[in-house]
Image (cartoon, rainbow, N blue to C red):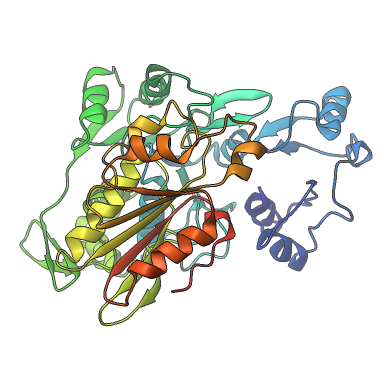
Length: 433
């Protein structure tokens, strides 16, 4: 939401906003542009008929006093995705959907377009090199590239966000059950991707990972007016900790990212860029300089004998893919993997069995969950034994961040690689080793 506020301000709009609390870096970024509210909290007097529109974020509840006032006055109310569509309705929209890999794939597309000096609007879920904000809007662009989240749009609009972007080119990177608080069955969840496919227009394109059995099945069986473009993991090899892409012409291109999942993301981005007018050779030229995104296999420390990565992994499939990627890059080096259960799904006892074997490729495996987080989410308490049983593979489970940190220090001598994986902060645990 704060990135949208910055993007609209940069476009010349008069922007104001409300929140009950604003954290860094949003606080400083909004302050620098003069967009901070005079005081925190909700005040219905901020809502008047002088407003052209109100954009409602997921954080605001149905009984929010400012929302109620806007409804009473008849001010036009948009959800975040509705307003992104409103700003780009006359542009060609590429929307990246999938249970995992959305941010990396979107970032790759943006990097390549930016490298070749294309003009475009965008929405991406992470900070990336070359971009001041995570949302960009302009008058002149004829193309928009959106990361397409399948989560709900707002408290008063329970449709998944990616449906509201009305993609011309749709990407599905993978399907693995997530957001079980709003999609209580796997079938409910998969249905959202089926609807996404059916919405694609004639003359558009559906780009999908044919290496994912569920994606392949769904995309091949679901009626679709758009062209279907399957992609696979490209030819590659690893040499001395370096991933080399092997092109169709046999050329080897050193990449700055690694892992089978990133190679798949790269091919999705390649096809999307072709739909945007970028040639295959132009794509390969640009992608060699892509360094990844913040918190996605981000290097925290590197020596001649050790690398420590921070990663946003939270879904079982992403957790497994990240660990296997790190193992493939340095097969002889001991691998320590630490993971925090942080999302609603991951802290749900019924969902835990999906993590079975997900950390198998690591040598040392540690899982943290915070009892405070469960209390804040008003969820039933877990115990360490049932979490350990769900993960299997000799995983050590902790509820105390300090105990987990001590455990990791006991196993880290400076000769190992380490993965620190969470969509949170490890309950505020120090990440220095």
